[in-house]
Figure 1 (cartoon, rainbow, N blue to C red):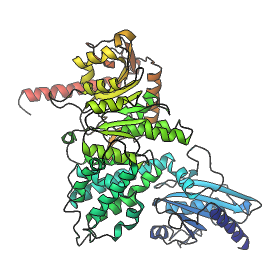
Figure 2 (cartoon, rainbow, N blue to C red):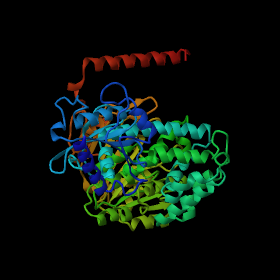
Figure 3 (cartoon, rainbow, N blue to C red):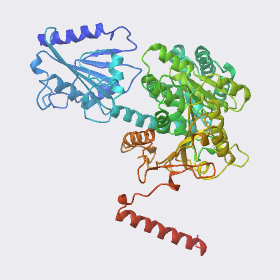
Figure 4 (cartoon, one colour):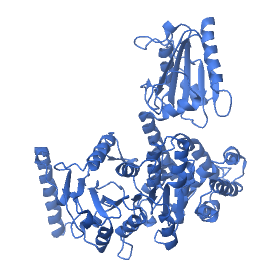
Amino acid sequence: MANERITEDMVDDKLRELGFYEDLEAVIVEKQQSAVEDIRKALSKASKTGKGNAGYPEFIITAPETPDMVVVVECKADVKKHESANLDLPRDFAVDGVLHYARFLSPKYTVISVAVSGNERSNRWSFFVTPKGTDEHEPLVSPQGAPITEMVGMFDLIAAASFDPKVQQQRTNDLIAFSIEMHEFMRDEAELEEKEKPLAVAGTLIALKDDVFSKTYDAYSARELPDFWIQSIQKVIKDAKLPYAKLTNMTQPFTSIQVHPELSKPTKGYPKGLLNKIVEMLAEKVLPFITVYHDFDVVGVFYGEFLKYTGGDGKGLGIVLTPKHVTELFSLLANVNKNSIVLDTCTGTAGFLIAAMNQMMRTATTEAEVESIKKRQLIGVEQNPSMYALAASNMILRGDGKANLYQGSCFDTAITEGIQKHKANVGMINPPYAKTKEDLHELRFVEHLLDALQPGGLGIAIVPMSCATTYTVHKENILKKHTLEAVMSMPAEIFYPVGVVTCIMVFSTGTPHAVSNRKSWFGYWREDGFVKVKHKGRIDRDHLWPEIRDRWVETFRNREVHAGESVLQLVGPEDEWVAEAYMETDYSNISESDFERVLLDYALFTLKISGVESGNE
């Protein structure tokens, strides 16, 4: 016992050296006990004797800002007792013991397990992560991919566990599940309109960035909190110093939440009011995602999830939000790096800018380069005041706020002159999809984006397939100034539940298509591996997307031609800009079952048509 106490003292000294005890609100270190009810409950039958009694490791460490993670440390005095051959002797070995406790905690937490044996002269340390919802452990590695072999600070441990792919997937699932819960609460209890829900989420997350608000909101009455909420939003936005937005323009969309009659009423179920409950839910469930996942489009994900549950297709809001894996794909197709200057003239919730920023950051090597990316190299325009507020909020929540965001029509002369001064060399756009003949054509937005880029730049757009298959004067106008590099036919349900079939167009700017006088590359990208799952939407359930994405990007960059996948073709404005029009079929991949399925589909189609003609439907 005395020798094991020496090991515990060694760990305790290391924790002090690394700052675990410096801020008792940020990191809580407990020894052989826990004040956290869920942890006590999980360990109530975790005795290493197997008799069903309570059991506790030497140290239990938590961080309130990351409530879904816990660190446990198990000590043994002798390095010979560090790890057994089969990891099945928890009473006698440090690794066996700490993984034993992890199995009891992992239904509720992602567990970071630390096994320590020996003393100051001779010791061994092992680090593992067990993702929440599993009982499978794996070595803990840093975000850079190096195994962790010695004790590091609490937030370095959290960052390492957060970048584990299984942990990321579980956290994503948790967030999507919570978005359904939040949507139903806002609909049934708060009676918020659909367009108000994402504003309530974004505004609250901004307010929570203010330390005073996050620590004192619960002290305010139901009637006082809405005013404190909007004041905190104004303070954070003012501190962010958005260069092209007046404070009133940015905060005006949030005032509908401030004055909403249902949010400031104390009720029997919610004596501090519904806004207090919304703040509490987001502080507990969502704020940790922002503090850990700086590349996680939280507001965009929430906005997309809310749209799924409106009972419509989102057209009433006049927007089609771009899926996150598509925004990531754009950044890879453009091959953005720390020198890129990226423009999106239909910014929405800033999904493209955030994806580009994440990719650009990966190539930055100095703080000055990081600061330049945030301050000078991301430019956006958004006309809708609510969407603009969400876009700016999304950037602020990432610790940015310096992105050059303009509010107004991208066709406004002053805004056009403003964005051209940034000399962007990469453009990304998902333009508003025209619903009537009076609406601006999608390619008119694309043309304007391309005209705003520097000569030799690259512009990428995702537009309805009709833009590629039908002749329009817009195709002709674009090709008079720019070169069509590629068009890729996308999955039919990529915008599910919005029913629109799309393609991605890639242009190089400043050289007329006829002057370039070369073939364009057409890709048939109809299968991205995503499937529809009840209550989750369209997701990468089988983890096929990374491999598919990498193949798409590689074949595009190298302009590879494969039967059934891609083709090179010289085209003009009168031609169809789709792979299907020119691609050779790869018959070697067609099986007997494929043939039978097509015949069955045709037979069902014929029966349906005959039924309609005979009046049976």
